Each structure stands twice: as structure tokens, then as C-alpha cells.
Image 1 (tube, helix red, strand yellow):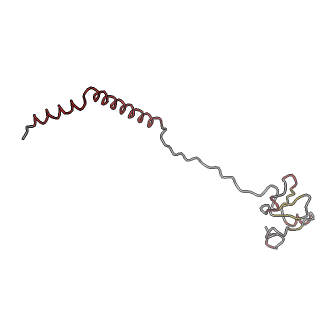
Image 2 (image 1 turned 30 degrees about the vertical axis):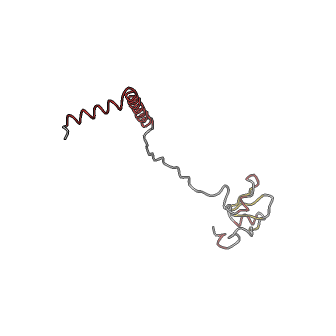
Image 3 (image 1 turned 60 degrees about the vertical axis):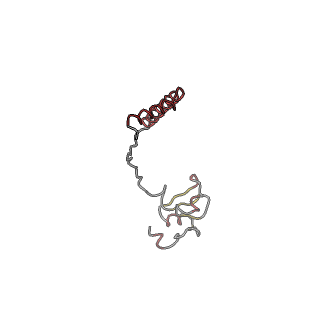
Length: 127
């Protein structure tokens, strides 16, 4: 059996033979490259801003009545609608006539639209 001293000397000789002149240059280059890479990686982590969560209060707008009332008609037409009916949404804002009640729309000479559900019925006029 070989002694520890002999094995140590064999390993040193093997490393010295394997490394040689070019091996030492390659090792220095790899250490420099690794150091640069680690430095670059730490700089990227420092550049990122920390994550913060902020609660922004949202404004809730009160939902009120539509522009001029509960019923709308076209000034050039002959029927009135609820503001959410598709026919009412096609009326240009400059051409809209608003009424506070179904009775007011009927007194102005308009009739209920047939494609707008709920118009002209007793429950609709009690709004």
C-alpha cells in the first residue's frame, strides 16, 4: 500500500501534467468568465423594482335616471321606448324627446313601441 504522502504527490504531479501552460490560462479564463456572469446576474436582480400592491379606491357613480326621463321617442317618429330598448339606442341624441311618464308620451301623440317589452301595459305606467 502506498502512503498518503505518496498519493498526494501523485495527484500533484498528475494535475501539474494535465494543466500545463495552456491549462492554467484556461482555468483563469473560466474563473474570470464565471465571476463576470455572477456579477451581471446580481446587477440584473438589483435593477428590478420591488413588487408592491396598492389599493386604489374606485369611484362609484350613482346610477340615476336617464337624460330626460323614463321614456324616449324620436322627434320625427311616432313611437316611444324605454331607454334600454334597441329602437331607442338608434335615435340620435339631437333627435331625442324625453318624457317623465308613459302618459306624457301618449299626450304628445306617441304610441308604445311594439318591439319594446312592457310598454303600454298597466304595470309599466305605474313606474
